[in-house]
Image (cartoon, rainbow, N blue to C red):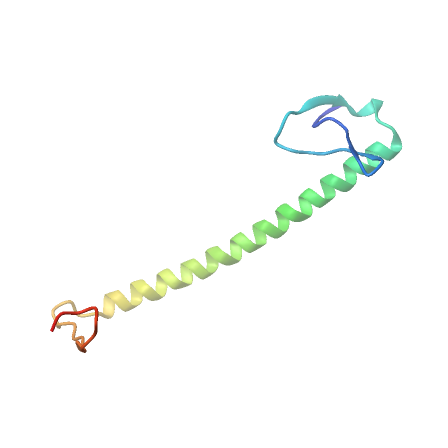
Length: 97
């Protein structure tokens, strides 16, 4: 059984397996020690948790977007384009009088 990992890197005196999008190497999992396998499992669990959280946040944002879209479409359908849009013009340094 093989797994795509980046190379072992030294972090504060301990080896740490890093899953990144950078240079990856195929590592045979049967050659890893129990400590290294535990580190891989811990990192994968963290990645799954992060992805699950990100997916939940994305789903919530999508629901909010759909609700906003529904409101805008509802309001625009009820807006009578034949009626003029009235806006008051006040004296301002940005407008010419």
